[in-house]
Amino acid sequence: MTDIAQGIASANGLLAASRLRAAIMLGAFALVALVAFAALHRARTAGHLLVVAYDGSREYAEEVNHALAAKGWRFGATRVVHDGSVQQVANLLRGIPGDVALLSSPADIDAVARKRTVIRPSVVLPQIREDSPNHTTIVFLVRAGNPKHIGDWQDLRRREISVLIPDPSVSGAGRMAYLACVAEGQGWSGAPGGQRDPALAWAVFTRARLLRMGARRAMQVFLECKDADVLLTWENEAHRAAQAAGSNLVEVVYPTRSLRAEPVAAVIGGQADGSEVGEPARAWLEFLHSAQGQEVAARVFLRPNDRSGIPMHRSLRDIELIPVSAVFENWTSAWAQHFEAGGTFSVIEEARLALHGGRE
Image (cartoon, rainbow, N blue to C red; front, side, top):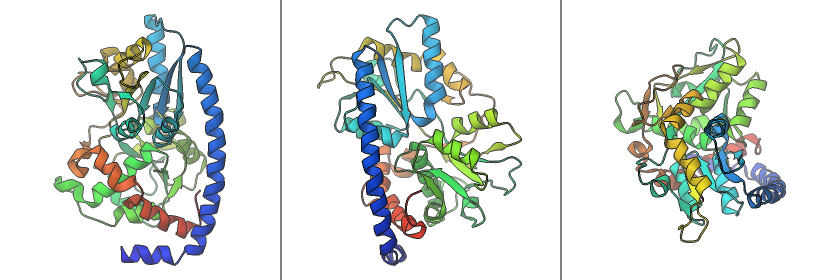
């Protein structure tokens, strides 16, 4: 921590300027949030089911709604709004309306539950054993042919590699990428072949370009920004982009192992005690965990539940996925240790801002 403190202290002038820019940006975000709140409130009062979802779930939510419509969905229109998962937590805590929250991790759901009534699938639907309807992970999206020969987490250390990552301040994908670097630095808690490199997360995240946006918008930047060598993103997003862009532009690279990410969909309760769950919300949630819902997840490159028996998409690789609890005790403690005020990421972020002169 001595080196970190010295690095931060030597850049006080740059930090002051970056904080001023951040304050201006916060004002703009607040205005956008107010407009979004008004639009969502109108939709909800019109009787629509509102789903507040993380950025990497766009095709998933769209396919779910198409499948429900084909089955004879009888509850009216369903509207899904997307943003980075961490940003959606902030939106929900500010009070934007929503009937269902589809967020990228159990920790995000826990954060919403601190101030709002959240009813998990296992409570809404007693037959459900897992709160996550599917799982995914973080992979590397690189240029076609992988000209920089990027193959594993340690390669991100190389100074000639230009790395793009969605900012963990707003993105669940960014947070999972950060935790994966920390896990790699800790040797994956004794997993076979794990190598210890405590400075890996520091080396990667102080030098990477962090995009203050969700996974989908970060993907668009990567596809347009030809000088970036690799994007760390959700597995389903990487395969979707590779399929859409074509193998002559980008390809997906799998590290030796990665963290198992567990998106969760939960009901935002209508009453303070959570005793009322609207039928549209219950039906939408139930479909995610059904066999047909698992097939939808597989079609859009998400990994179906372990117990479902539905095979994953043939494009996905069967790599070692390490549970968060195997490295960080549990989701909530991982978020608290690394992402709350004074956590390890905030220290790295201060140093990164000093080195780069502010947010991008």
